[in-house]
Image 1 (cartoon, helix red, strand yellow):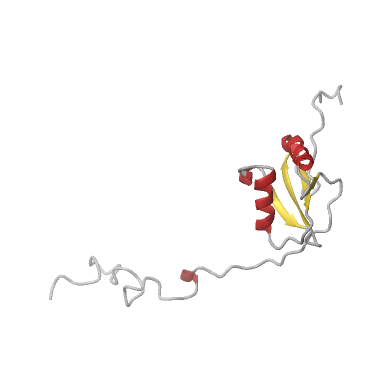
Image 2: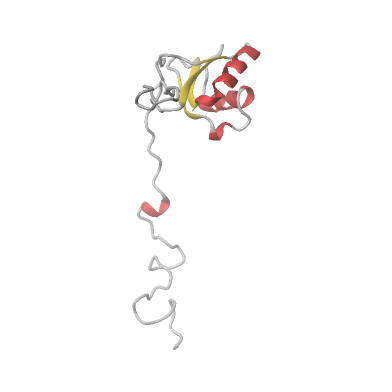
Length: 144
């Protein structure tokens, strides 16, 4: 590798997505986790005050006793230190991905304007002005 000009150490890859420069972190607790919000709150309390720009791809394990997520590898020491400083949660950097909960894709409701409604509700013709393309301004004639 040195002959080829590679002098930097090989960067790690996440077990979850194989993303270069990221590591996968596993967190396990003593109680079943009901939602991802609980995981985010745990991350805020024990790891990062503002995790939104550091943590990505949070997923629950199939048994719901833990979760996995990705962080940039530069935070590895901070995560391992947090694991030593408290005993309620176990933070580890796994070599293999645990079985993850499969979530059904939920299709959101379409926006109101795509449901075939009348559009702008103030006009009986379903649009503003009412007389577009007929050479008049607005919806009413000034001649009466």
